[in-house]
Length: 66
Length: 260
Image (tube, rainbow over all chains, first blue to last red; front, side, top):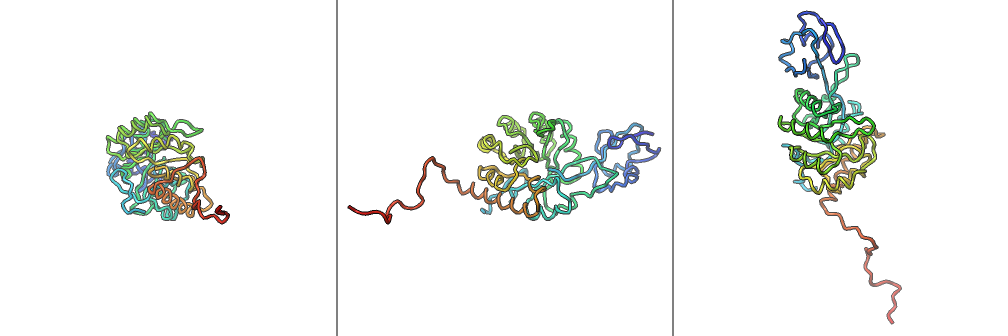
């Protein structure tokens, strides 16, 4: 199944959740915000949201900025 | 400094009138710069996570009690700014947002009209909104009507260190706008921060001038003192300027005087 993570096409495994994706990407959950198909996902929803075909996932974090 | 000379923005009362941007600064320098600047508000940006070269979260280097103001940099229109603001708020670090909407890549001028639109939406959603704008009185009034917590006009293009090039327009905003006016962008040296404060600007936001200084921590301290001096001078009331000389010493009792 294909999904888009931060603008890049990726293959996701069936049954994978957003939480699984974050772990696979080596992202520490404390520091990121996740948007799934244009909707912000609360932390509690990360392990409930299964990745779907063509899903658009944005994983963002803070950086220095003016 | 007068004890009650606090700057009210949203629901906060700030003692320091220097806001600091964290761009171009290594995380390790953040605690020193923040302490030396005395700032109570710092800006950060939101970006896609980079899985190939993970970076440490700058927020873990910012001391407790400092207000975090995410900016919407990267936004090209109101819709994108609103999206970034909502994402930033979901990170649980408060409801302040600096609106920064830019399409021009050479001078990084903000899009004032889109900024007004984003301000209207975000104020309704309960954000404390501080829009970055070109100093235009009509736009500033619209932002004020829309409920902006402050307006942040530029002194000169972002990162240019060119100082208060827009001073005549800043002066008009200071005179006419009731919400705090914060000069954001362009201030390159402490004397320019002091000049802005002397003009009656409510605060300044400095990033590049500190972050790219030889010694950013020391420069943060220099800015802190300049901002305080400028504020004090404004409160004291600057003496009038005049065309001709006016002697400081008495005009009587000169040694060369001979009574005839």
